[in-house]
Amino acid sequence: MTFDPASAAARGLARCHSCGRVEAVETRHCPVCEAPLHLRKPASLERTIALTIGAVLLYFPANLLPVLFIKSSVKGDSQNTILSGVVQFWNDGDYPVALIIFTASVLIPILKVLAIIALCLAVRSGSSPQAMTRLYRLTEYVGRWSMVDVFVVAILVAMVQLGSVLQIDPGPGALAFAGVVILTMLAARSFDPRLIWDAAAASAATPADDNRETRGADSAAQPPLHA
Image (tube, rainbow, N blue to C red; front, side, top):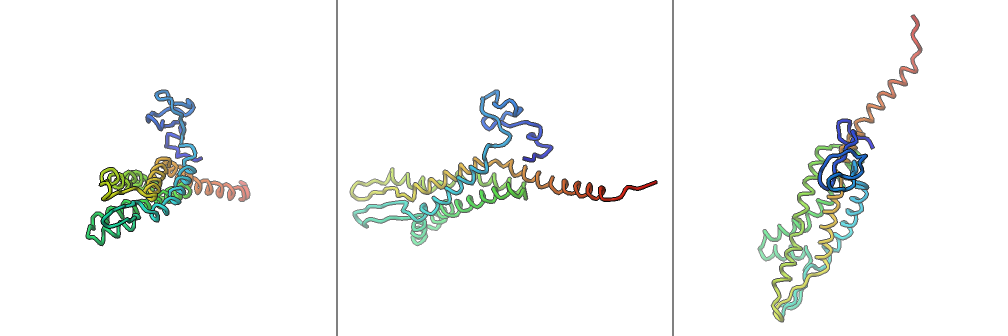
């Protein structure tokens, strides 16, 4: 792995992932909290990719399976998926609620998965490290607001139980969506953004090395000068 010569990793210094202390990586364990020291998170990219694939697989049942089962003696039994709930709120004129649920439950998970994929690709290409770092911070910040509808389901199940008149039960879609949110949060936390800067340093060093080799080959090909 190629490190930026100005980075702490190039000097053999590792930041503890638990307490933040900077220590020589040769010590192997942090002297404060005794956590293992690594220059970079071990298998960060592999874990991020695996968690993202799991989130993508759960995204489809999260949107296709029912989130709520409603049993009513007045209106009969019904079930709602995330998208049908958005449509129902929109048709009832509750536009802010429909937009919030659509944004938090449909749009944000898709954008977060795409952002994580872009970050993983940036580790390979090393392009735009500053923009990718800002994208990582935004992805990690937005992820904590992705459980809105799961909280709503939990509150409804706990509070709206009116015996034989109305009963609300969570559906498998809510469990699948919770899995999507948890996996994307874990994927964002397992990703090491410093890998982006390592890739940028490697891509910046490669042309310079190629130029030196080219100049060396040219000088070797030239015949020696005689006085």
